[in-house]
Each structure stands twice: as structure tokens, then as C-alpha cells.
Image 1 (cartoon, rainbow, N blue to C red):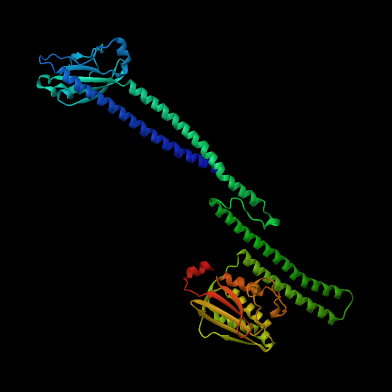
Image 2 (image 1 turned 90 degrees about the vertical axis):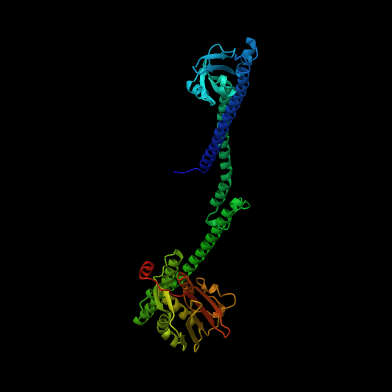
Length: 478
């Protein structure tokens, strides 16, 4: 199910706005109702006070109301402002009422009883189909002679109800208009918000294998999209670098594979042109075997680097002494060094524990030793130092060869780099140091090269020092 950002933005913003307007409308309506009710009650209480004084003012005890004589036309025009007054005794009998009343006001006996007891009571009822609110005022407050008398003052609620009805229609219309306007506005805002995203996507889609050098420039100066554009351009930089490195690697690998294959094919074709003595066939086979071994070494190196590039080179860690691993590698290369009268010395006074993959780290040490022996002149010396500095295991492999050309310290770890004039032209695949770097990084370590002040090259590998792991952690790592 595909969800729309515009629809989500519009629906959520509209719902929030509708809820806010609804709450405001309800609160406003209730507040207006309370204000109108208080005004009516204040009016009834004021009229009750005036009429109570008028009813009890005559010394003879005769009761009469204080009201104007109105014509029928005047009474009709003032219908909404009418206030009805009537006096009751404790038996519920009418004693006097307003001239505008053609019949008695509806009487609530409970409110009448409360007023006889001296309390002010309120009630709502219906008079001639119109809802009225009544105030029951005890006249006993005006003197003992009127203790059994109650003054009822009533007001019609038509005007209040019409006002509240208009307000309800107004608030409902406002809610509908605001909700509709919010929906349209938020939808338009959503459209405007995603336009830059579409433009960024359009520019991204235009970048292909042949245009990896292009970068995204749309809305890069807008704060909200600047980070997105920067991240995409950074990703394109990595892709471009990776693509270029892969292209160079493929071209170099093709070239390296072509040379031994061409030599192997030439030797075999030459041998098949005519019959030859067994000695010549033997020489051809030996030459073909050498080229085959070179191809095997190259294929193995390429496979190692391919595993590193794809992230599947995961060391199977085991805790061991780096001195022993270095000593084993030295013993294996001793014959190759003796052939050139090169002395190899191991300087490792203390045990140095490291968590590593023995196979991978052994290959790292072998490649460094093989590189040192190749570039060391006959009669030279190779020094292997194993120790620790600030909790980091350090392996140094130094030689007395020509050293490394200034500025080439990092380039020699690139693949198929065998053209350093200062180091001379040495036969090999050009992948040994690249494999050293890949293995060191797989162990969360580093490798660096420099020329020693006394001459010759020094390669330094730094690895994390071993920590004690539980058996479960070791099994999980493996």
C-alpha cells in the first residue's frame, strides 16, 4: 500500500484544525449561553426586587403591581422583552398577576414550597408553547404579614433561543469553512513541499554510469533540503570513486591476466608447430607451469580482495601470541632470504597477545616479509619487531632496500602498484600490499609505510590488543 505524504499532511492538519475550531466553538457557545442566562436571571431578580417592594408598599395590605399601561400594539412590539409577574399564596392560589397575562403562569409546587420557607427558587416551564424561566421570590422577606405569599417573575426564552440557534448555525458554518479551507491549504502546501523532492529525484535519475561526475544542485541552498542534497552528493562521490576504482581494477586485472595467458599460449603453440626433443617439451611444460602458478597466485589474490570489497572477509578470531606467528612466517621465507644472503631478525622480547584470524594475519606477515626480501639487495637485512604501544599491538617490518619514494607512501597500498622507480622493477602481481591493507582493516587495524632515517622501508601494522572473551562471545564471533 502506497501512502501519500500530501494526503497524510492534509488529513492530519485538517483533523487538528477541525478539532481546535470545534473545541473553541463549543466553549464559546457554552460561554455565550451562560452569559445570556445570567443576564435573564439578573433581569428577573431586579424585577422581583422592584415588584416585591411595590406589592408590599400599601399600608392597607392591598397588593398591586408596578407596571405601565401598554396598548396592544406596544405590547406586541415588546413581546420579547415581556416579564410576567404573579403573586401566589401558600395554597397555590393566585392573588394578583400582570395585566399582559391572560391566564396564570405555570406553577411549580416544589419551588413554591421552597419560597414559602424563605429560599429563592428557579424553575423552567412552558407558557402558551413558549419556554419560560421563573424566579420564585419569598415576600416574607418584606415583612411578617406577607410570609405566606410568593412572588413569581417569569421571562420568555424565545429571544435567547433564537440567538443561540443563530450562533449554532454560525459556528457550524465556520467549522465547515475552516475545515474545507484547511484541507485545500494543506493539500496545496503538501504539493509545494514535495516539488523540491521531485526536482532532486529528477536530477538523481539523470545520473547514470556515463555521468557519475555530475552532482545534484537543486535546492542545495535551502536549509531543509541542504542535508539531503549533501548526503546524496556524498553518496555519488563514493559511488564515483568506487566505480572508478573498480574500472581501474578490472582493467589492471585484465592486463595482468592477459600477460601470463599470452605467454602460456605462445609457449604451447610454439611447441606444437613441429616435433621436438623431450628436453624441449620439458622446458615448455616447466615454463607453462610457472605461468600457471603465477595465474593461480593472481587468482587467489584477486579472490581475497574481492572478498574484502564485498564485506565477506570476516576474521575468525582466536587469541594467540603474535611472536609465534611472526616466527613461523620467518621460518617459511628463510630459504628465499638465504638465496639472497639476507639476514632476518625477530625482535620480540615479551609475549604479545592479539585477537586475530591466524590464517589471514599469517598471510599479512608473509606478504610484508616477501615484499621486504624482494626489495632488499643481496647481503642486506630484514628486521621484524613485535611489541605494544599504549595498548595497541605493533608489528614493524623493516628492510635495507632503497626505501620509498617521497609521496608514494599511500600509493604503494593501491592495487597493481609496482612502478615505484625508487624500489626498482620487481616481478609480482602488485597485489601483496593491497592485501596487507585489506587484512589489517578487517582486524580493525591500520598499516602505514615510510622510509627510515637510516635508509630502507619500514611497514608498521597496528592491531587492537587482545581482550579476554567469554567462550560464548568467541563462539558468536566465530
